Length: 194
Image (tube, rainbow, N blue to C red; front, side, top):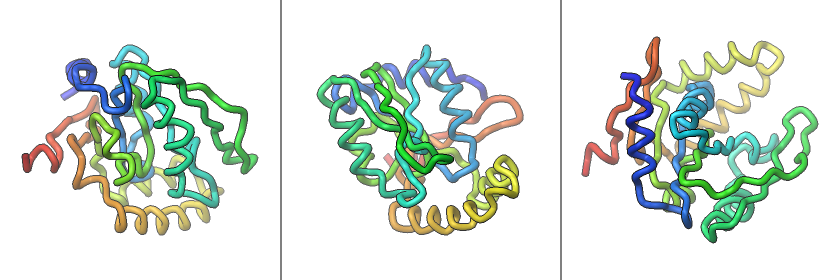
């Protein structure tokens, strides 16, 4: 099924979850296709903004970005104000110049851990890219090449620990599977048990 416009319309029809904004998280393992899917969904939403969690994480804080997200992004948005955050430059290993994220009807938050416990109360929907960890990581390693092999070794251990302590998939409203053409959108564990 490749009916993103239909799903986009359903997301726009949801009640706001963070001030005037419907925050929609796209979570899944590294390499599962979150960024690509979020870009396509944003397009189907008429150009919805996408916040990439890679901009908030750092080499030292792969998953310890919750306070930064709250202070710089979700608190201002909850008041209907623009968010300002400084994206992390993974090459320079430093935060860059601030960016502004204006409130919008739907804002997508994309990245590993986007559906974490601390963020779920602010989400209108949690979408999980349903691709197994090993397959996702292999795709990521192929994409990034051998130069980042050591980073991936550390990443996979950190991601495993994160999802062991704070799993997102069991709380997903929908599971999204990439097909050769398009996506399959399945009711998630949360919806299946309602």
